[in-house]
Length: 370
Length: 255
Image 1 (cartoon, rainbow over the protein chains, first blue to last red):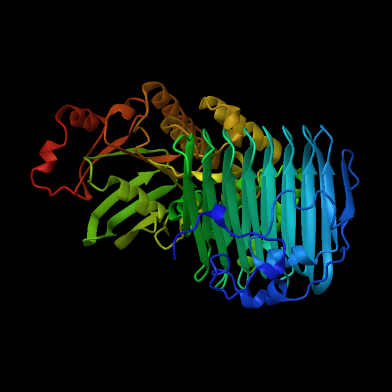
Image 2 (cartoon, helix red, strand yellow):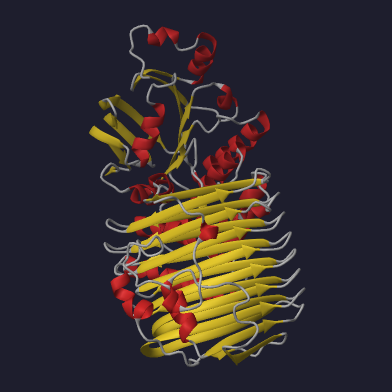
């Protein structure tokens, strides 16, 4: 099969345009599809779920119809589970960030319903606006959803999605972002809980000077499959992207997948991109796939690079800490905490950072059987 | 009086070419407050001695003993050795991403003392040691050794030595890569620790240079995995003038 450019991949908002998934497709070959058949192939409940959101000046949120003009403005599905959600949702949550003073807006989904659901969210940052939108997910859910993100000219938006689902929950999410002229998007994916959790952000830098940072943090225990496929599409000139995902894996059947596609298109001169994935394997048995891909269609770029590593603890780090009297299990916790803290620090919300530090601590204690 | 007794220590390391004997029967006795310089050519096993005492997993002790106040150290884990009162100032301290110096030092101090240090006294001690080592306060928030210059790493080692207050410290080529100002600052730190706590020191070096600032009580010449000659400070001066050649004629030097 010829290598296909990411730009040529088929897209459609209609589930019927996609073949039944076999598991051999490039999009699905690393995913345990039998655990999520209901989300890919099944009927989905598209009604508005019970979400709570904070009252925040400069940010409005409302449920809107499928026909709303904002829907479809940032992208379209590239695979069947995403298209299934798009074909099935009745109401979309529209979040508009308009304030020029930075505000934090939190959407909390504490799901208790295990029927397969479709979701759709559109986050629009008006030109010159500033904001931090946090999507917090916990509880029991079978969810496939699309999240559209439109960042207006010179706006600066951070979107954080946090998955702390119960073990039996499965969650497939496609995020589509369009970043405008001299605008900045910071996108953060944090996946700690859930069975199969797959969050795929596609960020299109469509106007000159657009800037995206995509961060991710995951901690996979036995039985968990945590996947993220990041796509950075440099369309316009003078665009910049940084991708950094870090994961820890603990337990015989812990599994993670990171795929990082970066496309620098023919008009994207003067671009600067770098993507990086680091995995820390804490026990025997886990598997981490880490696949960076870089396509460059113009000769005139500032920089383009990638790095990927998957490894056990650094024995020298442990020796150093232990040689200062710190017991081995505490030294290990210190190293993992430090490894993941770099991503936590990117979020920009003190409350959430404190919460996640504690959640990571709990993962580590659980991992060591305390 | 504390003492550190090394007896007939044999240590090997696994290499691609098989097991390689590095230490071939080391005997050393270090008393409280004494400074012993170990001098020797490259490849003589000086650093192996340092790491074997600290318990680095890369090295296998074939036979012999290391006793701290009569307690066998070689059966202890690395962290137990540190809590028993041993300290190794490393030649190449590693970076620990995401762990701040202040968090690291407090965690280590708590582990060594068995209880968290009282906060006010701790901050005062930390500030005072850092200031004497000419370390800016901003170091506290930096990640351990990350982006530190060679001199900054060595100062950070001596900062730990001052704060953790071990009974015996092995300084592994602490002088390497230091300019004369940094060498003085680091040496003053070592001398302060000795004056304050009666620290016994095993100072491993290739050169006589640091011995101008840290006065040794004893000098041991280390060649091909063992001590071949012992003397007072005058031996270091002689080595400086004559080099190690007279010890090497019959010895096979490690690579």
